[in-house]
Image (cartoon, rainbow, N blue to C red; front, top):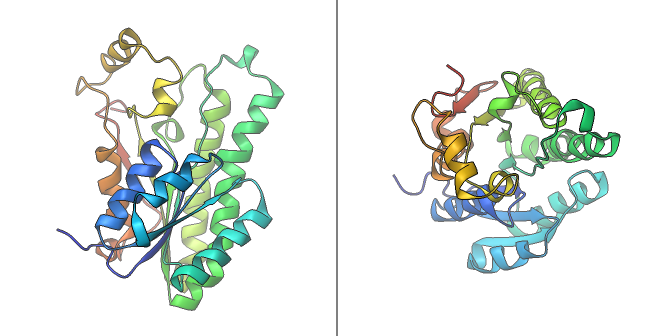
Length: 246
């Protein structure tokens, strides 16, 4: 079904590469106008490839002033904000004893604080529209415990809780808030953590379905939650992990 996001305006963070860039391409194909943001310069090229339906801004999601600027620029370019996809994230696994304070704070700043500031920044423009959809990209690590990723795990559990609380608080304004919980998805964030073919084969063997997910496996649920097709869905946790959490 094409055109599921026709007439919608979205902000997608962490959109220079990987899952965020794929989401942006899919949103434009579904009829949306999209503001792509990222700390990487490549986000400008990613938006340029999408033509007049996309804009881009360099954006540190832990900076509240930059969030306000992104929202203002999106409204100036496209007239409104209907959708926020809080996709930006970092993943640097380490045992607890080897996790530095600096690494823990870096995870907090991007994965948790950035998500909070994004939700806060879009509330007023979404209220002005009569509603909207916020999709928070959490993780399977936001539903259960894993070793050697205490900083990442902490922020993704926080994302789950923030989603539930925001869904309750914003429901009167017809702003829906849901979270996505991918398992092992083949993106630069995962491959960069270990990378080679043997590593990827080893972790794929731990998945009941026997394979690592692709970005398409995440993009389709994001489109569903962003669209009016999910108009009665808020506070949900959608998991796509190949059965890892069974």
